[in-house]
Length: 404
Length: 166
Image (tube, rainbow over all chains, first blue to last red; front, side, top):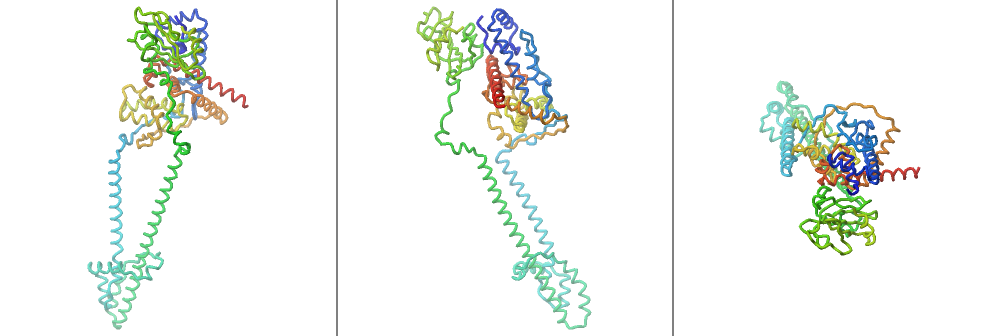
């Protein structure tokens, strides 16, 4: 049996190997001090790594309490020499988010609104809002219209005016109202409009009617009084109109200002979100393609595991002693003349400390084919091997002697 | 929400947030991503939930998870807050500092190694890790071996740097 690779040792420590494999490996470990030493190293790395991952917590937690990582970390260090599969971790550490006893999850919008649906909903709400505001405004105008009507009615004789104010017809009310709105006095428009709305004039005019009717004074006196009342009422109506104009103007200015601020805020946020490096980087650098991945450099079309590699080769896959493969994969073509091209090339990919790829290609030999004699390929049993890569030729030649 | 999904949430929310926090180093983002993951489970209940949930969560991390989360789907999480005793500030500081060093060491790993390691820390076996990450089961041992060795070496290098600095 060839030496055990690091992945197999970790799979052994993680309890992922089948019983027969474990027996074979244990038999090998009994007679191989190098693999036993590597198993100890692997156990140390496994325990230390799990302890480190278990330390990444936040907020309140009880360190060391039953985390899967911590639990798993504890077992290798305290384990006997032979690996024992760690127990499946069921208890977990105490986390802040686990304090919550009753947890209720409610999807408030399981289906995201599509663009059209969202717009229809927004327009519907806007229409409803406009209706409500318009209705309120009309009601407000109608309720305030009555005193304005009476106040701006044309002057009449005292008795008639008083009576007509008390029982003004709707036609008169409408006519007077429109006149008051159309032609407010200029002085009243300019006046600061902070006076409260006047009381209802009908109520005020009613007690005057019997008094004026029974009075023996000339009719002109009553007429003057009525004219003064009408003038006051016109001025107040004009004041109200001016007040409303001023409020509208103020509101329009405030809305414009708010809108401007919002737009400026959005623009500032969008600018801040931009990556400044991206902005300052030259376009040519940004457009440069990313460096090829290790898979691309190794020209592997499918990554495979150890079992699949063994199956493809009809026996154990060969490895470079003392190096850990990054991954294994299948590649097209053939390793050398005489290889069975109905089988893919099994490629074991390594990286040396300088980051250069080293590819150990293996392929079954065709039946009764001659042994390849070129320098880059050689035969071990029924397998043709080839070693190539980005490392210099002398390095590859040196590695060839370590292929097991 | 069905009873099954509620049970799923009870069972996997905490491990999912923990794994996401270890992966991202951002608690808020981890919780957002976990909620987005469960939101997707609401619309398409998975058959094999554990690898599915963790695979979706890791995919969300890889793409811009924050953008997906703020797209308009939210889950309302209601829970009662309970007080738990807290450690002293110095102990908390040391923990945070140590956790930051480990996160920094984790950041030196490539995505596949880091994710395999975090899934193993959540109790995944090789078959589940392979299903979650889309790798062959035979490659998991090698991946984990490399990830563990690199994590420990990166952490030890930081420790050495810290001792030299102090």
